[in-house]
Image 1 (cartoon, rainbow, N blue to C red):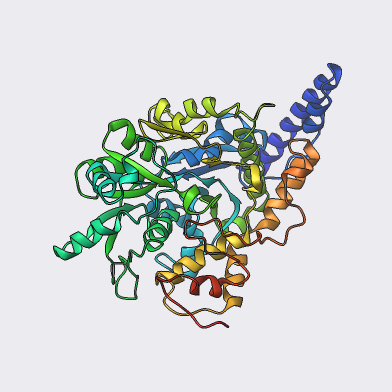
Image 2 (image 1 turned 90 degrees about the vertical axis):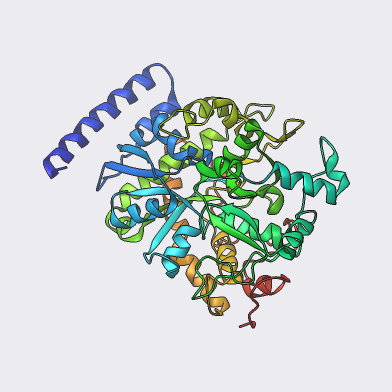
Length: 467
């Protein structure tokens, strides 16, 4: 866009705002007038392409577009499905995409040079929770034989991998290894299924400088499968289980081909899942545009988590209908609705209330916490993706290169002034570290201020000297 066109557009927007402000004041809508009176950011770029993978946790991007939050910031945004996580990241690095729905580990992996090298940053966490681990019907039957308590139509949750261990050992005796799927080497799903297996004494394998697949010492082999292909790959018998986001666990239930045995809420309560990532070079060149994007996403997350007086989510069914469109997630509305509206089917006989299965705004979830980044770094080191021991200082410095709460807070200040959020919505005074928590399936406490101590607390995985 030329400088002259930008000036012309800015003038038109100013006329539009003043007209709306006058109209709102005349009919008594003061809050709307406040918003209309907000100063628009001077955008460096107003036509953008954002990437996503067909999962329900792309919802903030989709809703920001469909509900006009991007447009309110003067942005014309295309939201474009990507075939897999690698191509999505590559397209952000090359500039084909301006930003994207990313795995939390992608900005970290790229910045530290695991796989593709590029400095990617995030100023916005898209959601908490949202994943599950599903096993095939035949594996589930074997788990039930190993633990008769699982024979119930509504077994006690959480379900650990204890009853899976004899299945793994039987295969090893036959010279075989159980094959399971996850979506990407630096995905939350990879670290979650590894965590679940290792908590029951099943070794999921190490990455080494020579072994990029992570099969070294593995008792279960974990391979990459794109999320929408998980159910078909399970049904074909190529894998016997997987860890993936929704709606692909619920799809297995709907098709009768598998049983979700746990969700990541039970592996780590209220764990971070996806982030919005951009190339740091792009962010440096387009600071106001980046702020405008974060503003729109904050509003989208708040809209998604809005409840009535009884605590019922009021916009989720509408969000599910939007997400079910072919250009977005493209799964059946009823399948998406299962988890997005506060319920989860482990089996057709086992529907449970899970109001926090998908969290997009509450619990200050969209703030980019340094401690979240440190957890992912510990898992990369635990499983050998980081090949050498690192100092405690390195963990903190690395997280701060990638997670940008300063940008988030600046965007939030604009929204507060405009009346779109309230002061309690944002953790204004935090230092970026959540309190230590032991709400993991193995009960081990994670304190982000002591990453090496946390790393060493696990029986399976790399251990380092304290420094």
